[in-house]
Length: 154
View 1 (cartoon, one colour):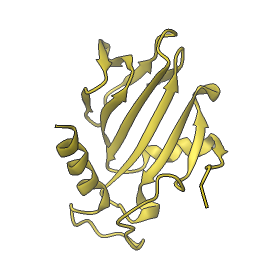
View 2 (view 1 turned 45 degrees about the horizontal axis):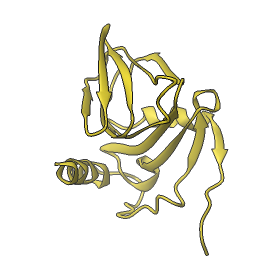
View 3 (view 1 turned 180 degrees about the vertical axis):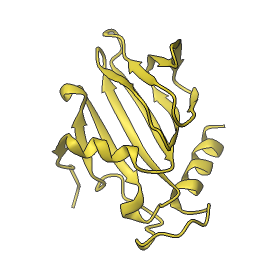
View 4 (view 1 turned 60 degrees about the vertical axis):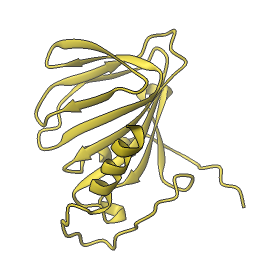
């Protein structure tokens, strides 16, 4: 199930949707060299893998990691659907006022225009998700965080 879900997301992210882009498509992005930014008051990171800069004009994909006790405040993506796959840990998500628990192996679908937020319990060591925005753009806000220098082996 996980492989099929991630393969489908990757297909959308790299251009299977046949949406044109001004950037040449990078079919493979080295996650160890992709830009990463510190977010959530230093309690998390956002790894930006596929987006308009890599030629993925139909969607974007990244990895979001949050430490216990961190939050993502309520916000809205007016023109982008957000899909999340929880790889590790768990959190409390609120979508349009509906509170729900999410945990490893869960997939979350948030239609464009809905208010949503995340809260990670103090007792959770790490909450790690794959994030996809269909209608890229929301991931650009992570660039406001402090860049994290990747540790790359020679």
